[in-house]
Length: 189
Length: 241
View (cartoon, rainbow over the protein chains, first blue to last red):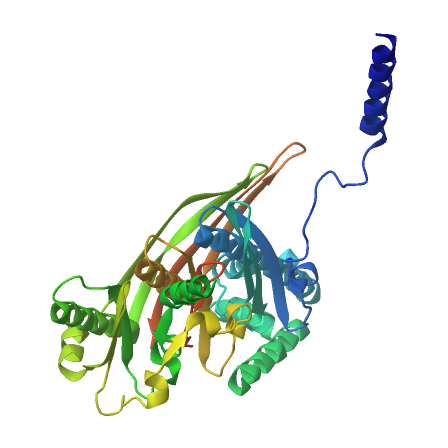
């Protein structure tokens, strides 16, 4: 009986040691081998905007759609940042900050571009994996910056008063050059 | 032992999926317009099934000549994940072209196995197939094409890949992948993205919506591939910019 008691005590101590000490096995195994490189390090190009996203679903197409649409939304935000920067430069250069009507017109033009137009945003890369019982989709969506600039220029052109004011500025010249470069690259594709 | 090996090899040969090359590489066909229609294998009256596939192929050719894609979908992101709030899409095309194609296009080739009937529809003069295009390809022997993960580019075209997991039958899986390819082309051509974000110290929500209303012209199915291991169907499509 004494032997049994000491054996039980030894076993209890051993179990406690193992439990408290922690094993060498990680608590949760994470298999990152299938994560595409372009998801971890998206490409960078001064003429392109890129956004990556990943999503899961029991339905494969919904996983792809979720990831792609979220990436496109991110692209929309990136365009917004670019347009806002351009608006700030334009405001500073032309001093239209004092002209509330013109400023409002420009803001409206910018908002239209940001919330509506993504023409030519392509799924550059896509990878679909089985993730347990779900499907996991990784996507990389690209959008030519020139397309956004072109859309902005066309919006501004629709407003004659704004266009007249904007056309004389250095910011417009730079925008126009960028758009022309984009149009050339489209022809040369 | 030899009997078991023979039995296994016979079973794997019977289960292997074969496709005509023109089905997998539709962009190599020498004629435009063309259409490939995939339907359930006929149990009776093969001629009637082929005729029905021809008519459906002409409808597909009419749709791909010019189709207006309209619709959208919404997702809602919370800490719990991304939830689909619904999707609706419709396609409108000139149905008068169907009759025209039924009188000008012909059945170029047919393929039937136990699961499906595939009919190639095209112009009988310019769509003459050589032996290479008529040959059969075991899908297990085709390595993953590069376009499955990396989208190709070519002057004057938008490309998109449509995918489908095994969706009830092989036929419905191919049809779903093709449908998804056309939708992906529409989204590439023009998408209106609207997003409303709400952030506070304790929660973050994002409601994002996409709307599509575009006219696609000269849609072409370029290639098909099936990942036999992962059971995924891929279709590469393109449209003129």
